[in-house]
Image (tube, rainbow over all chains, first blue to last red; front, side, top):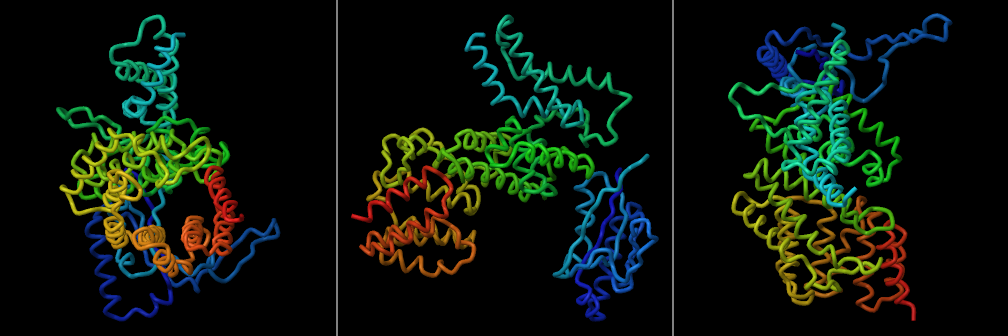
Length: 118
Length: 404
């Protein structure tokens, strides 16, 4: 088994504008994802909006540079993540394909293999 | 060394490369090591076949040698086994040992790889082309292509892209991705985008060879049959497209020199595909090629049928290039004035703004209407947009013929 990080990206303005029904449908989608994944879903969280992010950069030995906002400014922001376990990339793709954000008409999910140091 | 032995090794390279590599990957679970062992097996064939004779089953001989090399290498390096072996599922007891080529093709054309990487890996691992040959075909420096292949192989192991035939519900989509790679190899070979030669026959042959393998491995798939039909029908004209570096149009080609056996095979495959399922993009394109193949002369071509097929194609695959071909067919059916007005709406299409065939088609209709200064301007535009030397020579000759 391998571990993968699933990063969920989307348009924050559209996430902010979701109606209660849309939010409920999304919650149900995540519950269905968790139910299908079962023990293969190792962790997962929704993130506060990117406007609450703080970025630190090394400043050529002059201490740390602290700035407001995400590391990369982009139209689509990171909204949440999961860590899953899967036999191979095809299995990871079929699980990630269940995420409700993929039906929202904006954004998408990125699947990154996690390095196995074991 | 006798030519017969060299021919036998070359032939085994063309026919058996993918099968030998796929069988070796099952042992090594590492694409690089497998490739190395297979290359060594072919080198050993060149050394020993002249004295020992060509074995009765060259593929089996090469597979045994390559797998033995792989086992030796694995024993030597067992302590250094790579951290990320390729995921090669072990067949269940009692299951026949799979051929392996299909797994290899699906791994190379996995949708998680970029299209460029899919094409490079397929030509390298399935068709057995060297990195230098693949680089030449796609006009990139060899170092760039080598880096592309290395990156793709690294992704296969790090992201754990499995060496497996997709499940039946995924199969149609995944076969579609493989066919796009095959079609891209074919079109790149059929009219090389840049360079001295009109046709890169090695790429055309590689594409047809790949489609033949797919046809054997998934015989019921209509889209595979249709793409193979399309390529065979178009490639049947290969001997007549180029007269000593001069491009010959379909209207000028000597149809008696078209490959009749290949045309028959293509039309049989097309018939199979159309009986099996509703027409796909490749089937309609093959049907258009078949109408040309069956017409006794340019003048006797059934343009009515060709326009009707382009109408179907435009519905299945709405692309500006298809719309352009349809407009040209309208001009051939109803005359140059009708053709010119059919082309008019396409002149604003951004994706055709640098497409030489649009300028060339307009130039041809304008020429036939006697609007020579406008025709000259359109030929000059087409010339500026064309990179293939044989096509450039054709356009330059047309341009020169307009000025008395």
